[in-house]
Amino acid sequence: MEPAKFSIGLGNNDAKIRSDASKDYVEFWASQAKRLSWFKAWDTTLEWNPPFARWFVGGKINASYNALDIHQNQKDKPAILWEGENEERHTITYGELFSDVQKVSNGLKSLGVEKGDRVTIYLPMVPEIMVAMLACARIGAIHTVIFSGFSAASVHDRVVDSQSKIIITADGGYRRGVIVKLKEVVDAAIENLDFVQNVIVLRRTKIPISQNKKDLFWEDIVRDSPDVCGAEPLESTHPLYILYTSGTTGKPKGVLHDTGGYLTHLHSTFRWAFDIKDSDVYFCTADIGWVTGHSYVAYGPLLCGATQVMYEGAPDYPSQSRMWDILQRYKVTIFYTTPTALRMFMKYGDAIPNSFDLSSLRLLGTVGEPINPEVWKWYFRTIGKDKCPIIDTWWQTETGGMMLSPLPGLETIPLKPGSATFPIPGVDIAVVDDAGKETLPDTKGYLVIRKPWPGMLLTLWGDDEKYKSVYWSKYSGFYYTGDYAIKDGDGYFWLLGRADDILKIAGHRIGTAELESSLVSHRGVAEAAVCGIPHEIKGEAIIAFLVLKEGIKVSETLQNEVMSKVRSDVGAIATPQQIYFVSKLPKTRSGKIMRRLLRAIASNEKIGDVSTLEDGAAVSEIQAAFDDIKNQIS
Ligand code: PRX
Image (cartoon, rainbow, N blue to C red):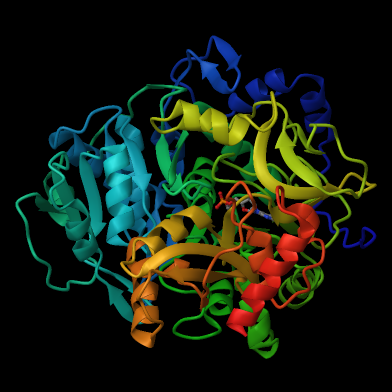
């Protein structure tokens, strides 16, 4: 592993934060929470009934109030500098955002939405997505945003699980020059769902849509609703949102976040990691449909009153230089993106970023997947011109906010390309072996979190048992992240990818079980197994192995049908790169698919240490299965 170099400081050195946090983490988080505006102070900072944590119990707070009302002394400050795909540009100030949110809150109230009701938001990356979330938060409705690339079947499952009363969508959204017909997807998703009372439609593209009895238009709601809507004082533990994410079982899990703890975590990490100043122009490229968009596009920046760029569409459309053009035009100072995007930009060549003025940049970040050291160094040199610290931030939908990251807003540490460095103050993270014992330096183990933290999920929506079994059953008393990691001799953490059956495709989390259940639902497929193999840009790509039913023949039509089945069940991001048809799947004696063996086959590797990694199968059996499948697909 590389020695530490790349030590770029931003002049901050607040050692007290770390020393306070190490004395008493509960007291420490209480001191951080005081930076937010509370309607009523809490009685108990942490109620910890393992594995359920409740932060700031008895306190009353509102997320929309902390994102908007408190910034009205600078109402003309831009909150969002928005870029549409077709070069439309708007600036939305804190004053304008405040006024739109109140109207939409009143509109929701007039439709009978009450505290605790669920509202599904299925919108493209337009400022209204932020307005819709904050409007829900203002009245205590629980928002559940679904990424606008998901299919009707995925939307259906999520709406049914959350029992959303209202859906907010758009006629369509732009993506790579094509209009994605979102309203059409929603119509198909909610057919026969009587509990959905209304669909609010934003006319984004003005394409014709079919109109149903339940439909209302966003524009009418904004025009007809009263201007003023006070923020509801909500219990700190009141759920702010549900965000569905892939798990190891077939159905996505509804990760449920609270209000007070989550806001405290974001307010703290946004300042520590990004060193945010009033004059900064921040740009996070995440879509709001994923957790990074919730935490570091929607809530984090607004809580801190930041100005940010938000864009619609794809990072390299209409041109490969789109990102650098945006950075130059808005004089972006802080840029937060994904390793997948960086790998793509790097492939396009240095000449493109080199032809733009990127001198406004002072801090760079990455999130969502491990970053290869060579990509890290390219980011540092070609984009940051050797003067910007890079924060490699490790966290998850479940953690709510960053857990491991350099924090240039607090301190200067030597960086190591490819390492997410150290835990943030007030969290306790370790790498442990199967028995839960900390591993020796440089030894691979599982990443666990040993104490509750404020951004921690409350539970899985409607399923406390699953919450306990997914995160708390592997180790007693530790939260299991599902990630492999190493802690080196200097205490730096290195993330090594998922230890469970979850794939990371272009940073998006996709469960193998979800994919396999879609594949086997095709009439011709008897059995299916998928695995991820390394991909130059996306990090991982999906490979599927299928066993067909008796009498079904392999054909191009069949292959296309299977691909489109996955696209319509899960979404385009889950499309396999390659499908192999085989006569049987390699399984252990207990019936578990030997996924690592499939991965070795698909990536043309030697069988290597696969044999030691699979339980319940003899080495000879594994070798035979390996040879058998290899022969069939070659
Ligand atoms: O495997 C880790 C990977 O992404 C997983 C969480 O995915 P998700 O809930 O979709 O949230 C992504 C955005 C926070 C983790 O379990 N991951 C996330 N950040 C990193 C990472 N892997 C390596 N390095 C990171 N910085």
